[in-house]
Length: 302
Image (cartoon, rainbow, N blue to C red; front, side, top):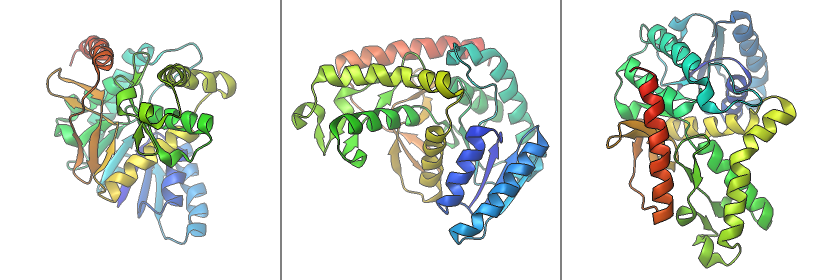
């Protein structure tokens, strides 16, 4: 499997390391306007790859032709979120950047899956699909995979249980209006309520913390990239292994004509959304997220 990562910054390069360590790819290409950075990351990762016992072709350049033959293209490029920013603040500048990336990319790929990571991710995924014209299932965003990972980790840490025993869903916009789906979250295979290990109030309190945690990490160290790389890598693994894994990626909602996160089945053909039943409060919050994303998508002019 060949993966191309557009953007050799901290998230892109850390994702590359994750993919090499997991033996997920046979070929990995970095493309970045800062060609020296892309080449440097490629060399560094190539040197590391021998430890993992798999020969991987790793390249780096500023030439979009290097994306040819990719099974999946991961787009991380864009202006990153800085302290005090919210994700929608990035909309105008990153819309222009995404448009340029897709224009360049389309000269060299015609059947790749496009996984969008750049923020605001739901809107950037919408832009990528509109500009590429690819089938909706072949273009999807990281969505709330990262946020759900953070929620699961925080719950597991509070309860001192194995994180694999926790199934937790953040849904809606990957941004200020996302919400924790209490009705869809489980502990040791039981609903949170049935498990008796956490009250609804405690769950909501943790969810509030999770919504603010990215800003906290950015404030403390300037960026967040380890957890995002794991989230991105897990999606690429689901595609590579054709797992049909259920994940909260950002997929096209045909009713509202936007991209938003609920749940989808992810594999070699892309991401196919599945129907889930929110409770009344969650449905209200989901519709509020939809309103925000509709307005943002209209601002792109696409």
